[in-house]
Figure (tube, one colour):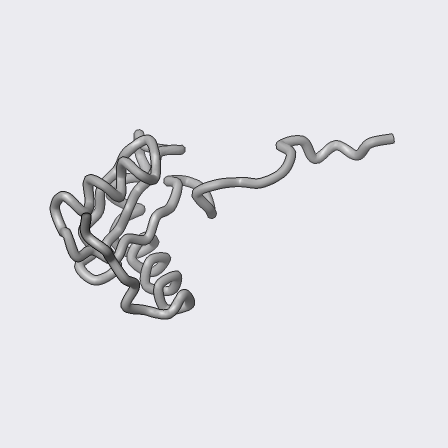
Length: 91
């Protein structure tokens, strides 16, 4: 089993990942893939799309074993959401 280590701070990781997603990946993947997951190598810009974060990341590692993956849900601000879906106030 390969042990992978991050080469960037959390802040730089997020900055690179978000910049790549917005400038290069999003325009190519958003149509027809809303809600799916994209894993982006923050060094090469290569990406893979799948239904789960693990599947997308595994596919990316298959192509780029030394990838530094940033994962995002297409059409959303985050991969996962915590809490209730309803914004109604309880009375």
